[in-house]
Image 1 (cartoon, rainbow, N blue to C red):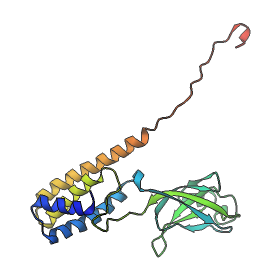
Image 2 (image 1 turned 60 degrees about the vertical axis):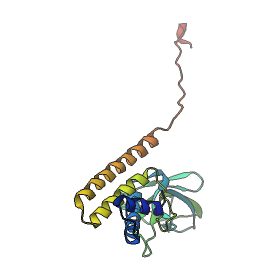
Image 3 (image 1 turned 45 degrees about the vertical axis):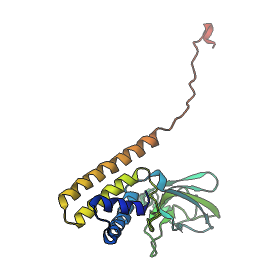
Image 4 (image 1 turned 180 degrees about the vertical axis):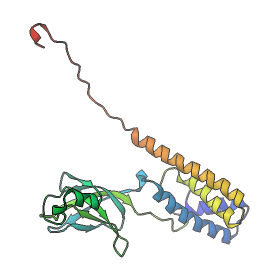
Length: 218
């Protein structure tokens, strides 16, 4: 469902089709969609980009599309280990801000513009591309044709909006019913996400050990 369809559906469920109710439903849907987006690390919210890191740099501001960094690769094949900055300092205080081999990164406070940042565990000694995989900032529902991007979110979002509308109308008992339904649907989304993540087939070769022959030879 797109935003316009959610507005029309929830308003009609209330028996109200006026523009005020639809506009209120739209405002609730936009806010609740952000809550669903931020609730878990959904597969559809992942984002990757490559950043050119010059020599002598340690703190890196990520592109605006990043909400946070999860994994990183420095150069062609060096995986960087993510760790809290305090843990990095405690593990090697002498290497906190000196040039050297880049082996990890730590998340930092956002910039004044709200951009995510990371700090490499060493000052770079050579220019190199940095591949970052992370969570994308929320793709908002702005216009009526915009759709949710997370599997199963439509039903959960609709229940949330129904709860908000009933709460807006001061019908709290009915609101609580829909909020409980929304919570159940949200937990179901998480369960499905986890089950799909773990159901990755792997082919592991099995080597059959033969019995030793006479004299201990195989």
